[in-house]
Length: 288
Image 1 (spheres, one colour):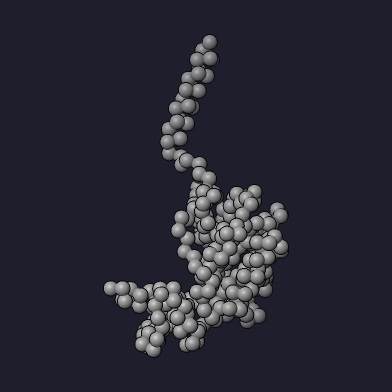
Image 2: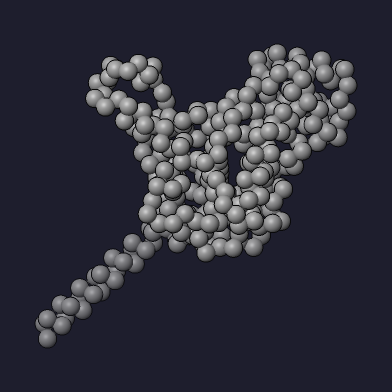
């Protein structure tokens, strides 16, 4: 009898502790709005990760983008293959800043959402939980592009290992309905040093230097398609200005041309991003 009382007391104590803990534990992540959302953000949590719907994704027509026709054709062809259930590659878009790398990926949602394409944005910090995301998407009918924008890693960061495995380094079969599209200003996504090209161990004393270099470039090698972007010349910049002004239903004339060139000189940059920023400023001034 005393033993029974002791067990009951322990059970009540355990139940009391569990109730108090439950008040501090987060609710399990809710199922995202698959029916209505076109874009999502993958966020890391203490339990792994959760998928959050984005009600107003930033997307626009591919026709709004200037001076990237060749890159656009390759990316569109790869995405079309993906949507048709044909083999397609993960894509790495690298090169000069502001030249349309991220915009190209965002515009794909505008073009192909009606055919079942969905876009999932993820930060570098959430890459460790990428296997959980792939498991969540595996049974869905939609086609998903996991979008890693402005991706790069510093020495000592381990997130790139999770991405390597997710791309094609793991034992499990690659998901047929998921591709990774990443943008970066670094072609190999990792910092590179002069002593790594000198044929010696360098100041840090790496014994097998070539193996260290191979490790750094192994991530970018897992992207089957590389697209390179280059700085705009003056005419490409003005073409981008003209297209963004069309988006604001504003004319492009000699006066606007002079203002746009002055804007680029002040910024020290001719790019699609600079063109968009000028168009926003110009439209705002005219509407004042």
